[in-house]
Image 1 (spheres, helix red, strand yellow):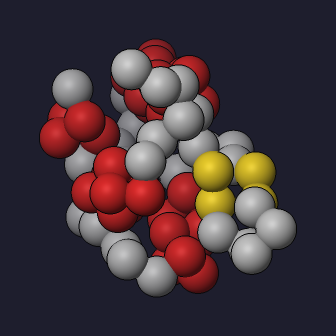
Image 2 (cartoon, rainbow, N blue to C red):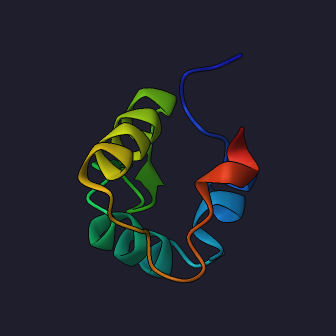
Length: 72
């Protein structure tokens, strides 16, 4: 399994197909990402898992539409 999320996994995680909307969802949830040369976001599983752990430890909820459980 690759550390980097595929385009399909990123779409499923964020609920968005547009890279602009994906970046917005990632930023709102404090998940860091790197931009490819074409502007699309690149996210690793480590980034996602750290955000999930931080959310649990702070007892905050992700906004509606953000579903980390689908990636388990």
